[in-house]
Amino acid sequence: MLTEALLIALWAGIAGIDLFNGLTHIHRPVVTGVIVGLILGDIKTGLIAGATLELVWMGMVPLAGAQPPNVVIGGIIGTAFAILTKQDPKVAVGIAVPFAVAVQGLITLLFTVFAPVMHKADRFAEEANYKGIEKINYLGLAILFVMYFVIAFLPIYFGSDAAIKFVEIVPKWFINGLSVAGGIMPAIGFAMLLKVMLKKEYVAFLILGFVLAAYMKLPILAIALIGSAIALYDFFLNKNNAAYREEEINDGI
Amino acid sequence: MASNYVDPSNDVKLSKKDLNILAWRSLLLQASFNYERMQAAGWLYGLIPGLRKIHRNKQDLSKSMKDHMEFFNTHPFLVTFIMGIIMAMEQNKEDRDAIRGIKVATMGPLGGIGDALFWLTLLPITAGIGASLAMDGNIAGPIIFLVLFNIVHFGLRFGLIRYGYYTGIKAIQQLKEGTKQISRAASILGLSVVGGLIATYVNFKTTAVIKTGEAKVKLQTDLLDKIMPALLPLTYTILMYYLLKKGKSPLTLIVITVLMGIIGKCFNVL
Image (cartoon, rainbow over all chains, first blue to last red; front, side, top):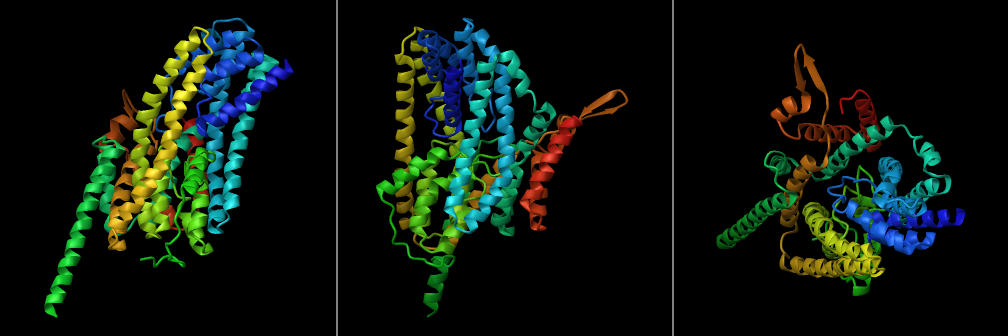
C-alpha cells in the first residue's frame, strides 16, 4: 500500500499545483479519476468514479477569488476510496470532505502568510534582484506541492479515521479568523496603490467608480467603459485646447 | 518623453520568441498568490525576461520591477493580453503612471470576462463531454477533455500576448503626442476602476446583532447598508491609506488586519 499511497500523493501534489498554476486542468476529477484508477489497478472504476465526481464539482469553480470545496482532494480521495472500499463514488467522496476542508484551511493559511513575503519581494524588486523574485514564486509552488502530498497520503495510507486526527490539529477559530482577515486584506493592496496613484485632481474618479459599483452594482467592465469615456473626453479636450492655444500664440506672432 | 528613465532609448524590440517565453512564464501567475497583493509577484515573474531585455539600466529595471509588485489580479488565461500591452508600453519607455493606469484599468474587466468565458462556459462544455464518455468506461473521455480544453487555453494564452503587444505598439504610435495627457487619461481610467474594485473585492461585513430590549438590530443590513453600501470596505481602505501616509509599514497593517479577523471571529462580530 505504501507505493500506491506515495504515487497517489505525488499525483495529488502535481494536480494541486495545476489548480492554480499551469491550469491545464489535469486536476479535474475526470482526469485524476483515471490516474488514480491506474495506480490502484482498476482503470474502469477510476474512470466512472472520476466522471461522477466531475459532475458533482461542475459549476463549483473559483469565481471572483472565492474558493469552492477543494476539487483536487475531493476527486483524488473520492476516487481512491470508491476503488478501495468498492463504494459508490458519491458516498466515497464523503470521506474526502474533512480532507478537502483541511486543504482549504491550509490554503487560507498559505495565502495569509504569503502576504508578508511580498515585502521581501518588494526589496528584491528594488534591488532589481530578479532571481529573488523567481525564488519566492518557486517557494510558493513547493509549499503547495508538499501540502497536497501530505493531505492525500494520510487517509490512503493510515485509513480515513486515523488520518482525520492529523488534519484537525489546526483549530477552526484560527483558520476562520484568517479567512475573514483574508477577505479584508485586499484593502491594504488598494491603499498601497492609492498611495502612488491618488492625486487631488483624481479623487472624483475614485468616488465615481466606487458609487457605480457599490450603489449601482455595475460590473467592473461597465465601470471601466465609463472611465474610458471620461478619459477619452478629457484627453481630446486637453489636446484641442493645447492646439487652440498654440494657434493663438502663432497668430500673436 | 521619458523624463523618468535614466536610459530613455526605445530601440529594443521583443521577438516572437521573447513573447512566447513570457507566455510560458504566465503559467505561474498564481504561484505566490496572497490576499494582500494577489497575483503581483507571479505577474512580475512572468514579465522578468522582457523587462530585463528592455531596461538595460539597473535603476530603470528596479523602478519597473517595483511598480509591477503592486496589487495585481486578473483572469489567469487572459493575463497575457495585458502582458503584451504592458510590454509594448515598457519598451517605448512610456510614463510610469500611464503604464500603471493601463494595467489597473485592464485587469479588473478581463477578470470578469474570463470567469464567464472559461469557468462558466468552456469548462462545463468540455468537462461535460469528457465525463459523459468516461461514465461509459471510455478512456477517451479524459483525453478528449484535456485536448479540447487546452487547445482553447493555450491558443488564447499565446495568441493574446502577440495581439496585446502589437495592438499596444500600434496604439502608442498613434498617440505620439502628449505623454502627460496619456498619463492623465490612464490615471482617470485606472482610479475609476480602483474605486469599483474597492467596493467589490474587499470583503468586509459584520455579523454583529445589537439587542435593545425586544428589538434586534442586525448591524450590517439594518444599519450600515442603509447608511451606504460597502461602507466598511471603503472606510477600512481609507484607514489603511491614511496609516500608510503616516508612515506605518504595510507589515503592521497586515498584523492589525489578521488580529482583527481572528478576534472579530472569536467574538462573533465578523
